[in-house]
Image 1: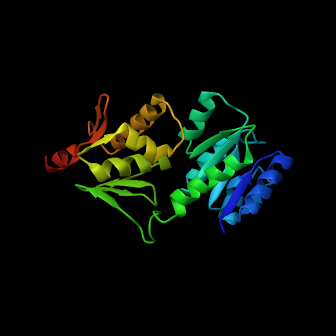
Image 2: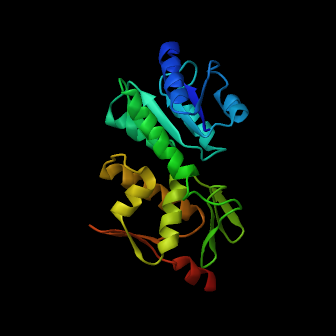
Image 3: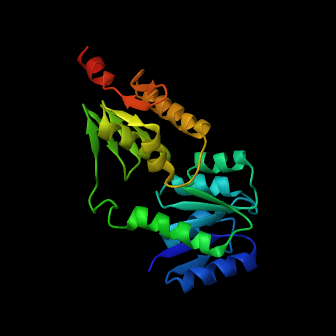
Length: 234
């Protein structure tokens, strides 16, 4: 049984979500204190979070960032805001999916199950810390940290997934389609969203003093070249 944390300030909607989640064999836990969402997340220890955007005190984007600072737990936004910018903002703040209201409850359940299979299913990471290493550049996916020499920087979930995909295949080309599938599963996103994430990863590498490693191959995808290996030798 998986535990689903429901952060929704409409009591009727929260209750309906909890009922449907229970009907499909999982446990829904409704949050009532919207001033201490992170503390409740740490107490509940959910497998996945349903998070509204419009909340008292702090909005869902804020709480998504707070959760992302300590966990890679899947987060699905549920919101009446249906503008593209709202959805982009959610994804940029660490969300895994975005569902607009009004919605069909079976769609919500299907998306919950999709995220649970991806993160906790047969292909999820086995116990024990994984590392992805390329010529001394080390990624710690579970910690969401990237290390180069003595320097260590903290990444967002999307940055971690993107870097892991690129490092795994470096110096081979990674297609746009492969990256989109890794980052957003079956959720539609536009080219600008992918470009924003690529730019953020370039900035992260720059924080480690690695410039020009992430190459854009126009019309095809991206390639991570191990230029930092040469820089270290020099």
